[in-house]
Length: 294
Ligand code: R5P
Image 1 (cartoon, rainbow, N blue to C red):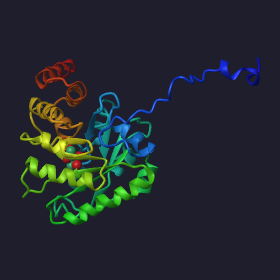
Image 2 (image 1 turned 30 degrees about the horizontal axis):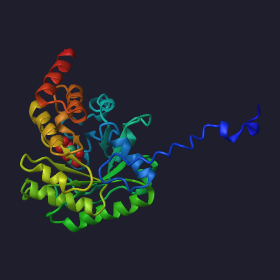
Image 3 (image 1 turned 180 degrees about the vertical axis):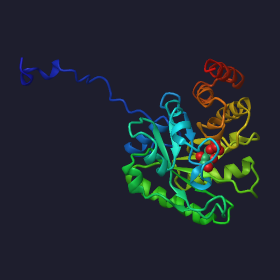
């Protein structure tokens, strides 16, 4: 029977079933436009609500960091096990295959090297270029309490304004200066400022005391940076404690790519973040994967 002759009542209109109107899964993100949400869903796994980001953007201020001398050799084998890659546009264009389906979080601030005052950063990527590279978010460092605090906060707000026009989330990265106390009060201050000024998610360092107050007071997701290389069990314990305290993921670099067995470490971190595996069990899992390779 031709389509036009089918009775309207015989067709599948399900008039008794209201259309679903789901809330977006991510903390504080429900009021964004579709493109922004879609980008965030490329970073945070919609099933677990969490993310394991692999950070290897260190070269933007410290050059060939240990473990990142050859990103093509050390990092590309890890990429399939990460939810998102945090990198610079130089590495994205020169090394990362455009066929990747991973979320990409691209560093968009920079300027000074390790030889200079680090807080003196400017925006280092135009939003149009970020769009051209189809990245899932741009990241900007914010130096609360730093010498160039206001300048770095303006970098954040200018990127947020540009991002809002095109549906690009901004990750606010809290940089902790040498003179700052690494405690929940400082992390809470810096994270909350980033969120208040429009960051869609915030990266901060984990602190053992009262980290739940940092996540509670931040209205958007917090992911933790890994920091300097620790023994694997300690790094897994830090990730587990952060998730337990309300972090929605990790953005980990040195604790993965400087490990003796980086793929095994990344897989173990995934177990902790996405499945809530206890650190001791995750460490055993790491060891078993590491030994399989021998
Ligand atoms: C610092 O250079 C970058 O922002 C890194 O992405 C960040 O510090 C995370 O890397 P790591 O886990 O090595 O601290």
